[in-house]
Structure formats: structure tokens, C-alpha cells
Length: 160
Image (cartoon, rainbow, N blue to C red; front, side, top):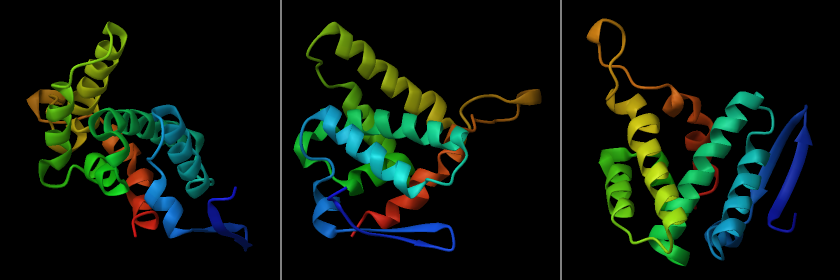
């Protein structure tokens, strides 16, 4: 893979060193290419994770990159991706609100946009905000946010 500066195998652990220029251009180009690039990078970074967590991360990344590419186009950055998946100070929720107001190219894209926005607000972010009721009326969200910790923790390796 030409965009990886260095891969070392030491004591059964893979160490990846991405070059800065590649990281700055990960989200450039068309939507599907951007998605596959980011998915590949996280597959490499999380090579030793159990399949369940890889699948959860894959789903988060695909939805996130679709949202960012449709919202910002080639101006989307890894910092935007970090803001979306971490939702620090509600920045991610603001992005979702902005995204949900976008006009779609066709009814199929409109439906997909709605599904992405709903997934973030009622599933992914609910693990942080506690917007779903749990047992005996206690506030409890889903575990999706927790299960996607690998994506959030690996972002620091990509943001320069």
C-alpha cells in the first residue's frame, strides 16, 4: 500500500506509520473511494481486534464518511471525522442536524440520509446521552458508542 510509510512487525505486533500527506488526503475524491480508504486504514490499525468490534467500527466509519462527504465534500477532514465520532461538546450532533437538512439528489439518497441521521441520534450517541430508557425507567443508551471505542482511540494516529 503506497500510502503507508512504514509497517513493522515486532513481537507479533504491527506498527503502522502513515505519512502526513496521505492522512491529509484520506477524505478527498468520490464518496465510495473515501469510504474504502478509511475502512482499510482502520482495518490495518485494528488488525488484532475481535471481528465483532471490527464490524462495529466498519459500520460507524461507513456511515460517518458518507455523512461527511455529503455535508462537506472534499473539504471534509479527519478532524471533522473525529468531531463526529467523539461528539465532544455536541459538535457531532450539530453536524447531524446540519446533515439532516441537506437536500438529497434522489429519494434513495434521502432515505439513506435519514437512516444515517436516525442511527447516530438514536443508537450511536444514545450510549453517551442516555436517551433510551433502560430497566426500571433508568436512562440507558445502546452500547454502540462503547463498542466503537477502537475508532475513537485510533483517530489520534491519523490526525497530525
